[in-house]
Length: 302
Image (cartoon, rainbow, N blue to C red; front, side, top):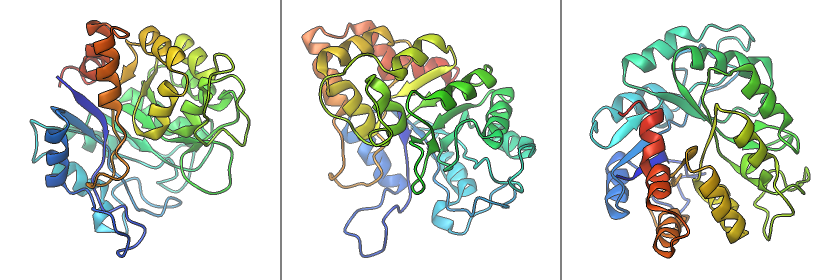
């Protein structure tokens, strides 16, 4: 079995004139079939004003309604595993907002997690800790987007060395957090700088960075390999990448993060991992764990 732990639907074009093919539900199923993927974890994308919005389904664009995306996912019970999504600033932008009602709604509708959380605030912001604690208390996984301490963009922010993510992980030991994004995967190497933190660094690792350390020290930290950030992390220094895959085979999740239904932007994670298996660089047990076994364990076998 193959499970894509990072899938999206929706029209993510910058404008209607952008020559990209939006990912509809029907196109997502075609994509999964074309790449031999059995099931996918669907991560809703929202388009809500973050500050002051109620902790419910506050959206300004029906294409990006968290509520509707969860409901739509239920149409494909054999192929799609639904997640909900929440911004920690919803509910009045307070550090003590009660997200219980919306998290209960997610659970009632078959969601096993929340994400990806893309709020552009620091990882250790009290509002983030509040949301993540409540997700853990509800038994919901959380997938993160990550970046550096930059003024614009999206994703939870951190400094080199990921001290803020570490504070969040230790403040919420009951919450399984799934690392993702440039801010997380750039830290494969020990020579990270603020300028490289939110990018895709190339070349051999200077030494093991914070990603290795936190994966070892924090039992509640997992990681999905999706997007160019994850692919770059395991291919920029192939021997180190193979060592990373083998050491953390019990905490890594295959994913694609393919946002459009055209060929542009597809990253060949599946093909690369298949090649490592064929070469003997990954054992069948490690391959199976990364491609589906770890996902099934985190999702309680769903």
